[in-house]
Image (cartoon, rainbow, N blue to C red; front, side, top):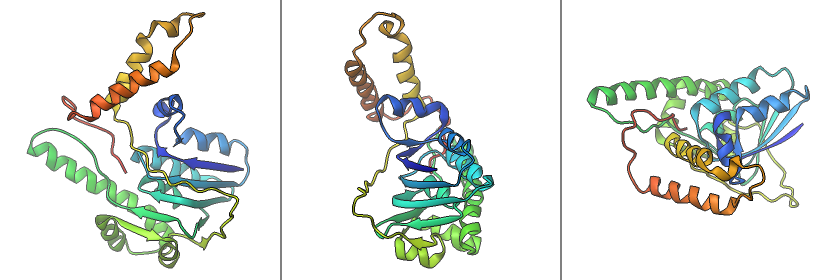
Length: 241
C-alpha cells in the first residue's frame, strides 16, 4: 500500500484543524489505517517536521510492523519527519531530496529553575531521538548528537554516504515534487479555533447555511492576532522537532 505523507507532523486530536483548511499533515492515525491492510507499505514523505510525540509514535508503529516498510523521501524530511524516515526497512531519497536533523525545541515561561529543568528535559529528548539515527546509520551516538547540535542538512548523496538512506531514486518526470515546511499551530490557537467552532450557532442548526469561507477568515484572523503577540500565561507547549 502506498501512502503520501506530506505536511506537518501532528497528533490525531489536532489533525482536524488541518482538515478544516485542506492542509497536508501526517498523523499516527494514517499509519494505523494503512497497517490494517496487512500489506507492505511504501511511504512517500515530504515534510518539514512537527510534534515530537507524533513523530515518536509513528516511528514506533512502523518499526514494529511485521511487513516491509519502504520510505521514499520525495522532497524534504526534516526534524520529526526525518525520525519517521529512520523506521524504513528501505529508505530511498530523490536526487533533489534533503534530510535534516537537529535538536528538539520548545517554548515555555518560568524562572531560572524552570529553564534549567527544560534544558535538561530537552537534552534527554535529544539523546532518546538520536537512538533512531544511530540504529539506522550505525554511527556513534556522540557523532549523531553533534550533527543534531549543528542542525545538519543532508543532500541525497550525503544521506547515502552517511547511511541515512539506502538508495537514490530514479526521477519520474511525471511526478511533481512539492517542498513543504509547515508551521505547527500552538495549543492556544487550536483551543481558540475550537471555541469558535463550538460557539458558532450555525453549526448547531440543522438547516442553516454555513458560511465556511467566512468562518475560515475568522479563524485566520485569530491566528494572525496570536502570532503577532507573545504567548502569555502559558507554562508548557508541546516539544517541536
